[in-house]
Length: 137
Image 1 (tube, rainbow, N blue to C red):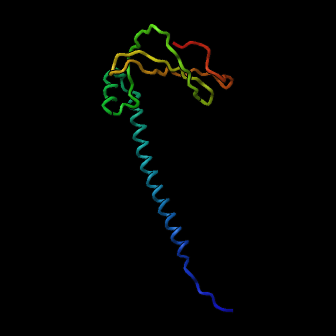
Image 2: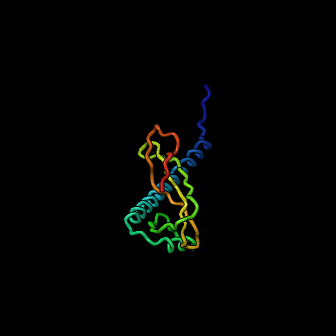
């Protein structure tokens, strides 16, 4: 029998090294993402407990490009002569079908004349296949 010479698998070794490099990069990215997400959740928690701010200054900050995500605001809707058109958005609440009524609100703040207001959740259960027929003010 002729003796076979051992050949080092160069291609397979390079592929394995590329795979290890990719996996290490993904691991570093996940650790960075964990730090970002922890910071974001801490910020959201702090802003949920913060007192509500007037809407006008918050909209002005948003217009200047500042980050106003998750900022609590307080404002009063101006009365409108036309009836408000309400839209119901599909949602899931505690694993069951729910609807989120959204309606326009006239304001005079931050250079805007109206904003969309999410008025919460109407739980309907799995039997509710369409938006509720009630009018949510």
